[in-house]
Length: 121
Image 1 (spheres, rainbow, N blue to C red):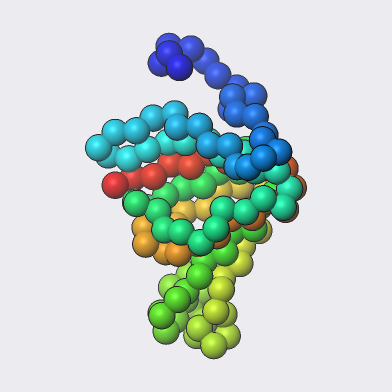
Image 2: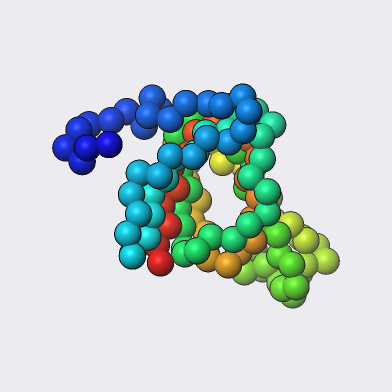
């Protein structure tokens, strides 16, 4: 990809029936930018990010689940883990979410979905 070319994000990444499609747009010592395309029902299993991140939904709708693990309270909503073992958020086209590194999370496509992910180290 040349850096002096204008791209349409929705058209830059395609869906793959066989799995999740990820395109790395930029990677440096300060972070990375990537696109991901998930068909309805596809899921990125529980993982952590290398840095604080922003996830922007370009198309579709996803469920973002923060898995609290051994924490005693949810830093986002203040609930106790007994009340909220997993914090679930629905994010749709045009919306974004900030999350911290080391927060274990899962992403599941509720509809065919495309996302822009920006991680800062």
